[in-house]
Length: 136
Image 1 (cartoon, rainbow, N blue to C red):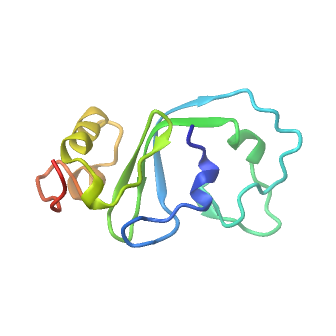
Image 2 (image 1 turned 120 degrees about the vertical axis):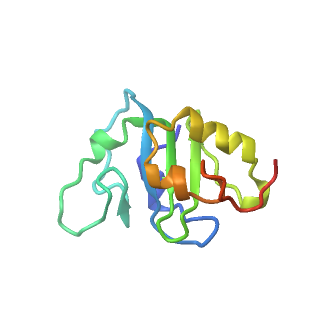
Image 3 (image 1 turned 180 degrees about the horizontal axis):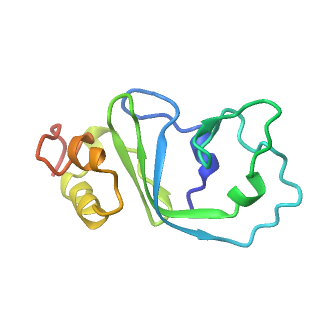
């Protein structure tokens, strides 16, 4: 399953920007032993709080590591590329490896939970038809 701490290292496949923003659609809390979790768990970026790590600040790492993300969208504000998280798996493919219909189906299925700017302007696929040339 995808975890928030994964965003401490993930970069946009298209433009290499960091950090990516996460919009969680489905998640579950799991029973994880957190007694030995050092804080902050992430070194650069806390996706759970949507902020860069600040020295000396207390972070809710013991709470965060229990959250398994089942469905979400990762988004790059720099180039507007989005990447789905399906069944807990991050799908970060280059444009030429993505499947238009599969991406459109994802957007349609979760349209009520995905920010409007991704639905309208996200790349390489969005619901307006202004898409880059990717595989069908």
